Image 1 (tube, rainbow, N blue to C red):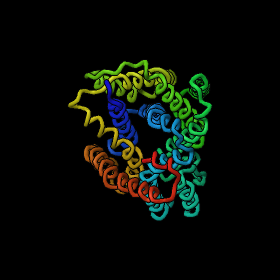
Image 2 (cartoon, rainbow, N blue to C red; image 1 turned 45 degrees about the vertical axis):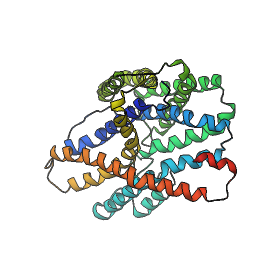
Image 3 (cartoon, helix red, strand yellow; image 1 turned 90 degrees about the vertical axis):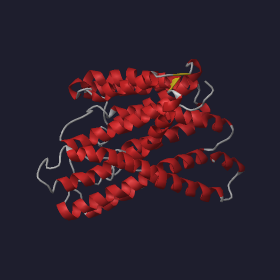
Image 4 (cartoon, one colour; image 1 turned 60 degrees about the horizontal axis):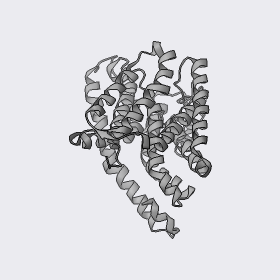
Length: 357
């Protein structure tokens, strides 16, 4: 196949984003735990990110794309929806402080917001278990995404494939050690266990870059196998937490990498490609926005008798959030990124800046 698109990977990313939505929202809108292991979607995201970024940018690095140009491009890609999600979360946090006297003070919320809006973690909550990003919990993974992106572009000139293999092996060993010591490979949301978030990012991203460099060994073809690959993600996300001690290493180090490698090799049939592409397009907006929106819904439901609207509110909430994410991607994120890119293009930049387009 001559196509440079990887629509099966887009479908996997979209399904994983929906799984994260279900993981977080099911206890609130269904009063049930559904897909309890969907936190593994983040490990999938990191592998996909490494592969996609290396595919898109390593040729540009070779042609002279600078560190600042790469980092600017990544910020333009990630920050608008990150900012929107943080604003929604900040509004909810302030409402909680005013109405419910939350565990964080107004001053603490302001300090947390100042750091979170800069894509930096904060430590100003009074809760015993402190999230890195009180405004939008899942943003911890976007922080580590930016960190590994920065390390990658700085190290790229000396990052030979042999060194990349060594980095992948070292980060895998460190994450495996964490998993054995703590009985799980989950972590990153809270300061307690924050280091594991960095290990998950380092391993997944470096493995994805390694896959990009080895993709010549993956013969590409199309067919319904792509549907099977998406279906196989479901049991990975649905594994009971009681099995976490052994299923986390199995999924993180074997099954998820195997599915990504298979996804690199196979494309969906032509009739399904637009659907897979749309799933990938909406995935980031869904991931960046769902949690602060869910927190608003949870605050409203607290004002009602327990389970007054479950499960019916769940049947409405899930599709509405997906639809809202699609709308945000199309009518907020895309125009804002185009506007920022246009403004930068009018600046007196070096000739290499044309490669950002």
